[in-house]
Amino acid sequence: MTCSRRNFLMGAGAVIFTTGVGANQLLGRQSLVAAEEGNGVVRYGMVHDETLCIGCTACTEACREVNKVPEGVSRLEIVRSEPQGEYPNVDYRFTRISCQHCDNAPCVHVCPTGAAYKDPNTGIVDVHDFKCVGCGYCLAACPYQVRFFNPVTRSADKCDFCRETNLKAGKQPACVESCPTKALTFGDLNDPTSEISQLIQNKPVYRQKVELGTQPKLYKVPHAKGEIKG
Image 1 (cartoon, rainbow, N blue to C red):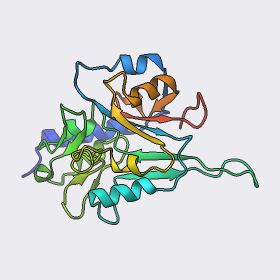
Image 2: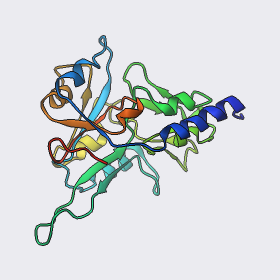
Image 3: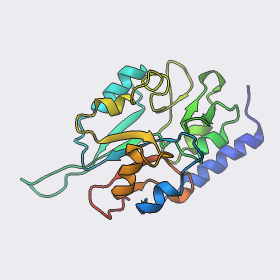
């Protein structure tokens, strides 16, 4: 199956749209959950608390094992900062890089075959392997650059919150279960009583590249209150 000229232009436009991205935006506490509550529909999201993350990468290994992610590619990464401070008081900071499960996902909009989609029942952005033709539009359109081609399935791949593995078995995503410091919180953003909603209401959090209108559902607790990541 070939991609039409119209779809090519859509993909090209998405690439232009994602270049020159500015700084991330810090979010207020009270309006964050209230503004995004749905009508009884589940919207799964995740919080990565950077103040608790120690960079052990237990999450990445658990993800690889549970979801059978081939060597050479990864659904999530923990990135370490440059050394902070001076010897002997040197420290590092860690942040999570993975699919943001955007409510307004560019990867879904540019996909010419419908392989990239957002599940209306969970809000999870996922990929139909059998529909993917390997055109690469979704990889180019993603502002977070977290998609890759799976060398086994030969289709686009990325974090799916363990939708077909742990989540289907009624468990938390593998990364959440494996984190020794409880730096990851997963749950329903539309439920104001859920642990994730309560955490977002009571701690300063930020999301990356919200100025693009992607409405990402991966939140982060910054290392210092009021900090804005570049």
